[in-house]
Every structure is written in structure tokens, then in C-alpha cells.
Image 1 (tube, rainbow, N blue to C red):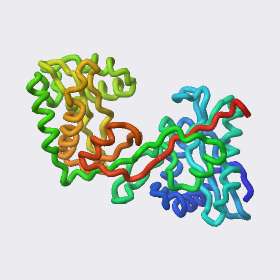
Image 2 (image 1 turned 30 degrees about the vertical axis):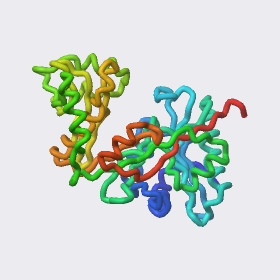
Image 3 (image 1 turned 180 degrees about the horizontal axis):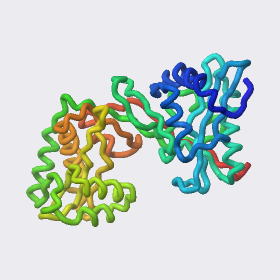
Image 4 (image 1 turned 120 degrees about the vertical axis):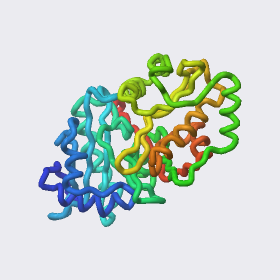
Amino acid sequence: MQIRPFIEEDSFAVVELWNKEATKYNYQPFTEFSFREVFIDHRYYDAECMWVGCKGDDIVGFAAGCSGDDLPLGDIAGYITTVIVASTFAEAKHYDALLECLEERFISLGKKQADVLFFNPVKLKWNIPSNPSHEHNNAPGISKDQPLYEVMLTRGYVDRATQCGMYLPLSDFTIPENILEKEKKAMELGYHITFFNSSIHTNLTSLLSVLQNPQWEKDVTYYMNQNVPIVVAVQGTECVGFAGPIIRQDNGRAFFSGIGVHPEHEGYGLGSALFFRMVEAFQSADCDYISLFTGIDNPAIRIYQKAGFTVEKEFSILRREFRHE
């Protein structure tokens, strides 16, 4: 296999390769248009960070990555998006050769490490294995069933975390009795779960600030100002927790930014109550399903499973550091 830089005229052949090989691992197929949207037309596109492997006139391998100093960890890290190789050439040496091209580009840019991480701005959609008509909008790492995963471990990448892709169809969702009981006990202590009403409820903005998640602060504030429904836990009129916003995407998927409870009000079951009431709100909004990621060691996974979520795929977050080489 000979490796050379990707040129735009390769797009048709790369799409064919992707649709034959990557879809085996539930990644969504591309058209030439959608391939261009994802890999070329984004602001972090780097022509020197896309490579193809060739056998004669045939393209049998493809590798893509990106970097940007303004990305999270962008001053020290380059992001690996994908490496795929035709099954007839799926030897470790071919994956290694394509990975090396990406790593050398990162090193030339002064990066100290290569990361497979959800901060990568290039989003790869994947289909839910148990219901391929439903999709998730991003893969936060390398699907563990890919040959690439084992190759990266052998190459010196460290498996830093496992993210579970979870899925819940909403048609038969009901709130369990024990959650309703928890919510009742919280109500006896003066808490109430409801929808945010700016004319009644206070302190949602300061709650978001206390939770110290800049993305939540930005997104939830935006949706709050747009009057998009947000589920809140309140004590009196003061917001002490939130879940949402409640958004139905065009594909029927439920979208929300996050769930958070003020540290001073933890321990009363508010997080669980917020989550289940949020799921109920999505059901009422005619959403078809929810898909989300959570760390395999996150205690919240038990709440998701209690709600009926299943683990559909596992993705690994990986890193290789260059500085000792």
C-alpha cells in the first residue's frame, strides 16, 4: 500500500471505501456531499491531515485528523478523526503507516500528543445497532470493535476512558414507582419539579454559574432566552436544579444540554427526579428516542438503565504523547 495526501478528486473512492468498511461498525454512510460537509468544509480542515492508501489505482485506506489552537487542548493536541483500511489490506502495518502520517503532521505543528476525544470538531454520525433507523450525531472516540482500536493500543496509545453510547425508545417509557416516591419525599422538604417560568422562577442563571460548566452556561442561557422548555427543580421560587432544554430534532431524536443540581441541594433525589421528568417531557414533545453518552464508570449509568436505556456501543478515548520520542 502506497500512501499519498488526499485530494478532493479522491472523494468518490473514499466514500465508497467508507460505505463498505466503516458502516460495518455502525458509522453512518456518506454521500459525496455529506463527506465534503464533514471532512472538508469545516473551519479546521487541514489538507495535510488527510491521507489515502493506494494499491495501484484503487484507494484502500483513508486517514483524517485535524487541529486548531483554539480547540480544547488545541495548543498541545492534534485530533485523530478516523483511519479505515479495506478488509483485504487490514494489516497492522497499514494502519500504522496512516497513523504515522497524522502524527507527523501534528508534530510538525508543535503538538505534543495525538488524541481521540469528543472535543474533535469533526462529528461522525452512527446508527443505533438495535434500531438503525435512529442515529446519534457524534462518536466521542474509536468504536472498540474496530481493528483500529487494537492497532492503536499496540502503537502506544493509552485507553483513557470508555464512553457508552446509550439508547432509549420513548414509546413505552413510564416513570418508575420508586422515582415517584423519591420525588414525593423531596416535595415534603419543599422542592418541586416543574417547567421554568421566567415570570415566577429566579436564579437559573446563577445556578448555571455555580455548576461551572461553560457549555451549559452558554447553551441553557440561550435556550432560556428563546423560551425553549427547561425542566427545573425549585425551592420556593429559586431554581436549584435543571434538566434540558426540551428539543425535538428533525430526526425525532431528543436533544438536551445537560442535567445539574446545586451542590447545596444534592442528596435529595433531585437529579433522578429531574432526569425522569425530562424524559417524560421529551415523550410529551413527540420525540421518538433519546441517545446519549456516559462514562462506563459514571454512577449515572444506573439511572439511565433504570429508565430503560441500553448500552448500544462502547467507544474509547485514546491518547499518545510525543514528547518522550
